[in-house]
Image 1: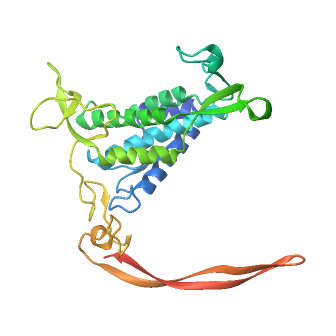
Image 2: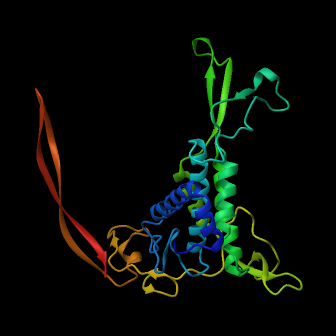
Image 3: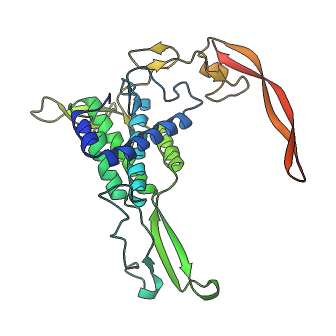
Length: 314
Protein backbone atom coordinates (compact mmCIF):
# COMPACT_ATOMS: atom_id res chain seq x y z
CA UNK A 1 0.00 0.00 0.00
CA UNK A 2 1.71 3.24 -1.14
CA UNK A 3 2.33 6.19 1.15
CA UNK A 4 2.82 4.25 4.41
CA UNK A 5 5.74 4.46 6.84
CA UNK A 6 7.42 1.18 7.98
CA UNK A 7 5.52 1.15 11.29
CA UNK A 8 2.25 1.64 9.43
CA UNK A 9 2.99 -1.29 7.12
CA UNK A 10 3.63 -3.49 10.16
CA UNK A 11 0.39 -2.19 11.70
CA UNK A 12 -1.48 -3.24 8.53
CA UNK A 13 -0.17 -6.79 8.82
CA UNK A 14 -0.77 -7.22 12.55
CA UNK A 15 -4.06 -5.32 12.95
CA UNK A 16 -6.23 -5.97 9.86
CA UNK A 17 -9.43 -5.34 11.87
CA UNK A 18 -8.22 -1.89 12.92
CA UNK A 19 -7.08 -1.12 9.36
CA UNK A 20 -10.67 -1.44 8.15
CA UNK A 21 -11.69 1.33 10.59
CA UNK A 22 -8.59 3.41 9.79
CA UNK A 23 -9.31 3.17 6.06
CA UNK A 24 -12.91 4.19 6.69
CA UNK A 25 -11.73 7.14 8.79
CA UNK A 26 -9.31 8.27 6.09
CA UNK A 27 -12.14 8.15 3.55
CA UNK A 28 -14.45 10.09 5.90
CA UNK A 29 -11.78 12.76 6.34
CA UNK A 30 -11.17 13.03 2.60
CA UNK A 31 -14.89 13.26 1.79
CA UNK A 32 -15.43 15.93 4.46
CA UNK A 33 -12.46 17.87 3.12
CA UNK A 34 -14.05 17.80 -0.36
CA UNK A 35 -17.34 19.03 1.11
CA UNK A 36 -15.79 21.91 3.07
CA UNK A 37 -13.76 23.16 0.08
CA UNK A 38 -16.08 22.21 -2.79
CA UNK A 39 -16.45 25.84 -3.90
CA UNK A 40 -12.83 26.91 -3.42
CA UNK A 41 -9.91 26.97 -5.86
CA UNK A 42 -8.39 24.15 -3.85
CA UNK A 43 -11.12 21.54 -3.47
CA UNK A 44 -9.07 19.00 -1.55
CA UNK A 45 -7.48 17.46 -4.63
CA UNK A 46 -3.81 17.45 -5.51
CA UNK A 47 -1.24 16.13 -7.95
CA UNK A 48 1.03 13.40 -6.67
CA UNK A 49 1.13 9.78 -5.61
CA UNK A 50 -2.21 8.37 -4.54
CA UNK A 51 -2.10 6.99 -0.99
CA UNK A 52 -4.49 5.77 1.68
CA UNK A 53 -4.64 9.42 2.74
CA UNK A 54 -5.50 10.78 -0.70
CA UNK A 55 -3.10 12.77 -2.87
CA UNK A 56 -0.94 14.90 -0.64
CA UNK A 57 0.08 18.52 -0.99
CA UNK A 58 3.82 19.00 -0.78
CA UNK A 59 3.99 22.40 0.91
CA UNK A 60 3.50 23.57 4.50
CA UNK A 61 0.36 25.55 3.66
CA UNK A 62 -2.98 26.00 5.42
CA UNK A 63 -4.48 23.45 3.04
CA UNK A 64 -1.93 20.81 4.05
CA UNK A 65 -2.60 21.69 7.69
CA UNK A 66 -6.35 21.16 7.25
CA UNK A 67 -5.78 17.86 5.41
CA UNK A 68 -3.77 16.40 8.28
CA UNK A 69 -6.19 17.61 10.95
CA UNK A 70 -9.31 16.27 9.23
CA UNK A 71 -7.69 12.89 8.47
CA UNK A 72 -6.50 12.52 12.05
CA UNK A 73 -10.00 13.38 13.32
CA UNK A 74 -11.57 10.98 10.81
CA UNK A 75 -9.43 8.05 11.91
CA UNK A 76 -10.06 8.73 15.61
CA UNK A 77 -13.80 9.03 14.88
CA UNK A 78 -14.06 5.81 12.83
CA UNK A 79 -12.03 3.75 15.32
CA UNK A 80 -14.16 5.07 18.21
CA UNK A 81 -17.30 4.15 16.29
CA UNK A 82 -15.94 0.69 15.50
CA UNK A 83 -15.29 0.12 19.21
CA UNK A 84 -18.92 0.97 20.03
CA UNK A 85 -20.20 -1.55 17.48
CA UNK A 86 -17.88 -4.30 18.74
CA UNK A 87 -15.94 -4.45 15.46
CA UNK A 88 -12.51 -4.37 17.10
CA UNK A 89 -11.08 -7.12 19.28
CA UNK A 90 -9.34 -4.92 21.86
CA UNK A 91 -11.99 -2.31 22.67
CA UNK A 92 -15.69 -1.82 23.27
CA UNK A 93 -17.76 0.71 25.18
CA UNK A 94 -16.06 2.96 27.71
CA UNK A 95 -16.37 0.90 30.90
CA UNK A 96 -15.04 3.74 33.06
CA UNK A 97 -18.46 5.39 32.65
CA UNK A 98 -20.25 3.40 35.34
CA UNK A 99 -22.17 4.04 38.53
CA UNK A 100 -23.69 7.25 39.87
CA UNK A 101 -22.44 10.65 38.76
CA UNK A 102 -22.97 13.97 40.51
CA UNK A 103 -21.09 17.22 40.94
CA UNK A 104 -19.37 17.71 44.27
CA UNK A 105 -21.86 20.36 45.36
CA UNK A 106 -24.89 18.27 44.37
CA UNK A 107 -26.81 15.88 46.57
CA UNK A 108 -26.72 12.20 45.58
CA UNK A 109 -30.30 12.22 44.27
CA UNK A 110 -29.66 15.26 42.05
CA UNK A 111 -27.13 13.45 39.88
CA UNK A 112 -27.66 10.69 37.34
CA UNK A 113 -26.37 7.24 36.50
CA UNK A 114 -24.17 6.16 33.65
CA UNK A 115 -25.98 3.79 31.32
CA UNK A 116 -26.00 2.58 27.74
CA UNK A 117 -22.78 2.41 25.74
CA UNK A 118 -20.52 5.43 26.15
CA UNK A 119 -18.11 5.73 23.22
CA UNK A 120 -14.48 4.84 23.89
CA UNK A 121 -12.96 7.98 22.38
CA UNK A 122 -9.74 7.48 24.33
CA UNK A 123 -8.99 4.31 22.35
CA UNK A 124 -9.85 5.95 19.03
CA UNK A 125 -7.63 8.93 19.78
CA UNK A 126 -4.75 6.69 20.89
CA UNK A 127 -4.92 4.55 17.73
CA UNK A 128 -5.13 7.66 15.54
CA UNK A 129 -2.05 9.04 17.29
CA UNK A 130 -0.09 5.80 16.88
CA UNK A 131 -0.95 5.44 13.20
CA UNK A 132 -0.98 9.02 11.90
CA UNK A 133 2.03 10.28 13.83
CA UNK A 134 4.16 7.33 12.66
CA UNK A 135 4.47 9.02 9.26
CA UNK A 136 6.53 11.86 10.72
CA UNK A 137 9.78 9.95 11.17
CA UNK A 138 12.09 12.82 10.19
CA UNK A 139 12.45 15.72 12.61
CA UNK A 140 11.73 18.63 10.28
CA UNK A 141 9.67 21.82 10.34
CA UNK A 142 6.99 20.13 8.22
CA UNK A 143 6.90 17.11 10.53
CA UNK A 144 6.42 19.36 13.59
CA UNK A 145 3.60 21.16 11.77
CA UNK A 146 1.92 17.89 10.81
CA UNK A 147 2.19 16.48 14.34
CA UNK A 148 0.64 19.64 15.81
CA UNK A 149 -2.28 19.55 13.34
CA UNK A 150 -2.79 15.80 13.82
CA UNK A 151 -3.24 16.45 17.54
CA UNK A 152 -5.63 19.34 16.85
CA UNK A 153 -7.90 17.06 14.81
CA UNK A 154 -8.08 14.60 17.69
CA UNK A 155 -8.63 17.37 20.22
CA UNK A 156 -11.59 18.70 18.20
CA UNK A 157 -13.19 15.24 18.38
CA UNK A 158 -12.68 15.13 22.14
CA UNK A 159 -14.17 18.62 22.54
CA UNK A 160 -17.33 17.77 20.57
CA UNK A 161 -18.25 14.56 22.41
CA UNK A 162 -21.74 15.04 23.80
CA UNK A 163 -23.72 13.74 26.73
CA UNK A 164 -27.04 12.07 25.87
CA UNK A 165 -29.55 11.40 28.66
CA UNK A 166 -32.86 9.57 29.03
CA UNK A 167 -35.41 10.09 31.79
CA UNK A 168 -37.19 7.25 33.57
CA UNK A 169 -40.20 7.57 35.85
CA UNK A 170 -43.96 7.33 36.21
CA UNK A 171 -46.10 9.44 33.83
CA UNK A 172 -43.13 11.05 32.14
CA UNK A 173 -41.47 12.21 35.35
CA UNK A 174 -37.70 12.18 35.58
CA UNK A 175 -37.17 10.42 38.89
CA UNK A 176 -34.17 8.64 37.43
CA UNK A 177 -31.91 9.66 34.58
CA UNK A 178 -29.31 7.59 32.73
CA UNK A 179 -26.70 9.19 30.51
CA UNK A 180 -23.99 8.12 28.08
CA UNK A 181 -21.36 9.81 25.90
CA UNK A 182 -22.00 9.94 22.14
CA UNK A 183 -20.04 10.94 19.07
CA UNK A 184 -21.19 14.11 17.30
CA UNK A 185 -21.87 14.03 13.57
CA UNK A 186 -18.61 14.14 11.62
CA UNK A 187 -19.96 17.16 9.73
CA UNK A 188 -19.77 19.14 13.02
CA UNK A 189 -16.06 18.36 13.24
CA UNK A 190 -15.64 19.40 9.61
CA UNK A 191 -17.21 22.80 10.23
CA UNK A 192 -15.15 23.29 13.41
CA UNK A 193 -11.90 22.53 11.58
CA UNK A 194 -12.91 24.81 8.69
CA UNK A 195 -13.19 27.61 11.27
CA UNK A 196 -9.70 26.70 12.49
CA UNK A 197 -8.53 26.93 8.87
CA UNK A 198 -10.00 30.43 8.58
CA UNK A 199 -8.09 31.56 11.69
CA UNK A 200 -4.92 29.49 11.17
CA UNK A 201 -1.63 30.98 12.39
CA UNK A 202 1.75 31.02 10.65
CA UNK A 203 4.61 29.46 12.61
CA UNK A 204 8.29 28.75 12.21
CA UNK A 205 10.42 25.91 13.52
CA UNK A 206 13.03 26.61 16.19
CA UNK A 207 16.06 24.57 17.19
CA UNK A 208 16.68 24.05 20.86
CA UNK A 209 20.08 24.66 22.39
CA UNK A 210 22.72 22.27 21.06
CA UNK A 211 20.15 20.75 18.71
CA UNK A 212 20.82 20.23 14.99
CA UNK A 213 17.18 19.66 14.10
CA UNK A 214 14.09 21.79 14.88
CA UNK A 215 12.45 20.83 18.15
CA UNK A 216 9.39 23.08 18.51
CA UNK A 217 7.22 25.69 16.77
CA UNK A 218 6.65 29.35 17.55
CA UNK A 219 4.39 32.00 16.04
CA UNK A 220 5.99 33.89 13.17
CA UNK A 221 5.78 37.43 14.57
CA UNK A 222 7.90 40.54 13.86
CA UNK A 223 8.57 40.83 17.58
CA UNK A 224 8.17 38.70 20.65
CA UNK A 225 8.23 34.98 21.22
CA UNK A 226 5.15 32.83 21.60
CA UNK A 227 4.28 29.21 20.97
CA UNK A 228 1.02 28.42 19.13
CA UNK A 229 -1.94 27.29 21.23
CA UNK A 230 -2.92 23.63 21.14
CA UNK A 231 -6.22 24.77 19.61
CA UNK A 232 -4.55 26.58 16.68
CA UNK A 233 -4.25 25.16 13.19
CA UNK A 234 -0.68 26.01 12.17
CA UNK A 235 1.10 26.40 8.83
CA UNK A 236 4.62 27.29 7.68
CA UNK A 237 4.19 29.14 4.39
CA UNK A 238 1.64 31.08 2.38
CA UNK A 239 -0.67 29.05 0.16
CA UNK A 240 -0.14 28.89 -3.60
CA UNK A 241 -3.03 30.42 -5.55
CA UNK A 242 -4.05 27.01 -6.98
CA UNK A 243 -4.95 28.65 -10.31
CA UNK A 244 -2.63 26.55 -12.47
CA UNK A 245 -1.51 22.94 -12.31
CA UNK A 246 1.84 22.74 -10.51
CA UNK A 247 3.58 19.48 -9.62
CA UNK A 248 5.83 21.23 -7.08
CA UNK A 249 2.94 22.49 -4.94
CA UNK A 250 0.56 19.66 -5.85
CA UNK A 251 -2.03 22.05 -7.34
CA UNK A 252 -4.24 20.64 -10.12
CA UNK A 253 -5.45 24.10 -11.18
CA UNK A 254 -9.03 25.21 -11.80
CA UNK A 255 -9.39 24.66 -15.55
CA UNK A 256 -12.68 22.91 -16.31
CA UNK A 257 -14.18 23.62 -12.87
CA UNK A 258 -17.87 24.58 -12.72
CA UNK A 259 -18.33 28.16 -11.53
CA UNK A 260 -21.22 30.45 -10.59
CA UNK A 261 -21.49 33.50 -12.85
CA UNK A 262 -23.69 35.48 -10.43
CA UNK A 263 -21.97 34.57 -7.15
CA UNK A 264 -19.79 36.96 -5.14
CA UNK A 265 -18.18 34.16 -3.11
CA UNK A 266 -15.33 31.71 -3.70
CA UNK A 267 -17.32 29.78 -6.31
CA UNK A 268 -17.75 32.86 -8.53
CA UNK A 269 -16.38 32.60 -12.07
CA UNK A 270 -14.28 35.70 -11.42
CA UNK A 271 -12.53 34.15 -8.40
CA UNK A 272 -12.47 30.48 -9.38
CA UNK A 273 -11.25 31.05 -12.93
CA UNK A 274 -8.42 33.38 -11.83
CA UNK A 275 -9.18 35.96 -14.53
CA UNK A 276 -8.88 33.46 -17.42
CA UNK A 277 -12.57 33.73 -18.30
CA UNK A 278 -15.14 30.96 -18.59
CA UNK A 279 -17.16 29.05 -21.17
CA UNK A 280 -20.93 28.62 -21.09
CA UNK A 281 -22.81 25.54 -22.26
CA UNK A 282 -26.39 24.33 -22.09
CA UNK A 283 -27.52 20.94 -20.85
CA UNK A 284 -30.93 19.33 -20.40
CA UNK A 285 -31.94 17.63 -17.17
CA UNK A 286 -34.80 15.08 -17.21
CA UNK A 287 -36.71 13.45 -14.36
CA UNK A 288 -39.96 11.61 -13.65
CA UNK A 289 -42.80 13.86 -12.49
CA UNK A 290 -46.59 14.07 -11.99
CA UNK A 291 -46.64 10.45 -10.83
CA UNK A 292 -50.05 8.89 -10.12
CA UNK A 293 -50.98 5.70 -8.34
CA UNK A 294 -53.67 3.60 -10.07
CA UNK A 295 -55.75 1.02 -8.19
CA UNK A 296 -54.54 -1.67 -8.28
CA UNK A 297 -51.55 -1.57 -8.55
CA UNK A 298 -49.29 0.48 -10.75
CA UNK A 299 -47.84 3.98 -11.04
CA UNK A 300 -47.66 6.15 -14.14
CA UNK A 301 -45.37 9.15 -14.49
CA UNK A 302 -44.68 11.86 -17.00
CA UNK A 303 -41.19 12.96 -17.99
CA UNK A 304 -40.26 16.53 -17.18
CA UNK A 305 -37.15 18.31 -18.39
CA UNK A 306 -35.49 21.68 -18.22
CA UNK A 307 -32.59 23.33 -19.98
CA UNK A 308 -29.92 24.89 -17.79
CA UNK A 309 -26.87 27.02 -18.48
CA UNK A 310 -23.60 26.03 -16.82
CA UNK A 311 -20.21 27.73 -16.79
CA UNK A 312 -16.72 26.20 -16.64
CA UNK A 313 -13.35 27.88 -16.19
CA UNK A 314 -11.12 28.27 -19.25
